[in-house]
Image 1 (cartoon, rainbow, N blue to C red):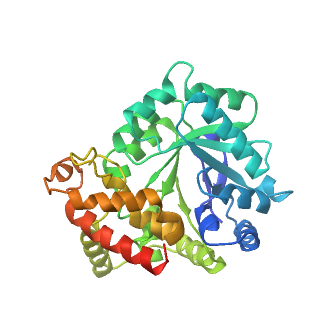
Image 2: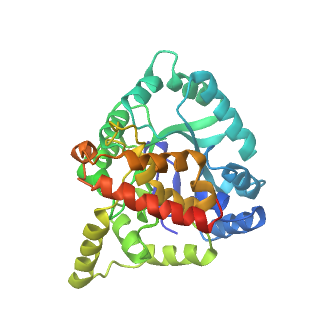
Length: 346
């Protein structure tokens, strides 16, 4: 497989990354191990997981025990918390992965000015990362995010080695709002989060052909079956051969689906009525990746109940960078969530 250099880390990995959320939500331990081994055998060497992905770290660690660990580059991440809790998160990830060190450790969801301040305050979370790095427990430091302004600001600090950010032909903000350019200036490795648009893009050729035009970007894909790995590798290594008619079809799809495509940035908040908007509008992405039982939580169902108090004041629409019909999305997603919950017996 083609190798891609991960920015200033100097690591080279296979051009296709393996997102390990799906092995937590869709596969048992044995099937997870077989899929991870198959990925390694086909040249996939980068694996992304998180402390918050249920038992994903445990399954990935089991699959990579022994000599296979030496062939894999592993990234994990933890939510932003207080320094003591974040230090425990690193401990927990190492224990669950059964590893002496993690190649890349990231702040999971660095999306708010308050979080940025938590990371860079004196005695804050970046100090925790640096201590772990100095002790040899992590090698490089990164973050994942969804908000262009915060992502650019974080990259421009010069302290991050890796960024995990949405990039697909549905999510073009990394390019249009300067996140990709900032990463290039700082030689920060760019990992493409949700290259299939969080499950909305069902054409693998569309998804892969868009991302591979960025030579330094590694798409991180949630595989569930070996044949999916084979298809993506085949598509990645073929020449792009779209006709004008096919490109027009892609653009029509993007515009149609884009009207209801929540990026998860959270700019719509706060709601004057107290509705946790993002929890409801972003749910289809979580459902596609995690299934009904994991995505439909008591907190979500409580949020769905609050949809009824929406006054359609449209303040959320005014704040949304993409002018989405958020009141309509709230009502539509509420119906979808309740149908799925009923079918799943939740």
